[in-house]
Image (cartoon, rainbow, N blue to C red):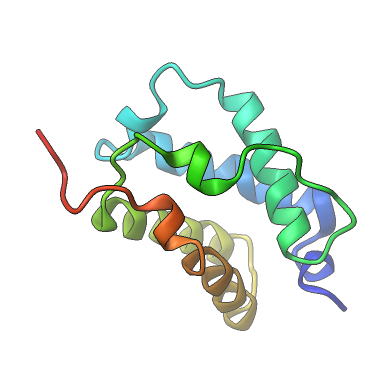
Length: 122
């Protein structure tokens, strides 16, 4: 069984993405990154991306991660906070520690595409 299937396929991943963005947008340190962002569109793209990278039949057609995060000034601390919210989301949904680790590894593999600032400015 693929990670995609263990996460509940596209519906399960969509549920996780929805909960994840509720947590991230509620975080005062991360919320400014999402001001003026079309969150329903972002959720759709994130669901497709996670579906694809976990072995699902969905093909992600959005911008690559480096282009999508360019100019945002995301710091290592902010990246780690996002990962923490993702772990919290998956834990709350009953995802196994092994599968959470696999998702974390996939995300961490793209850290250099997402983190664009050494430290928070302002």
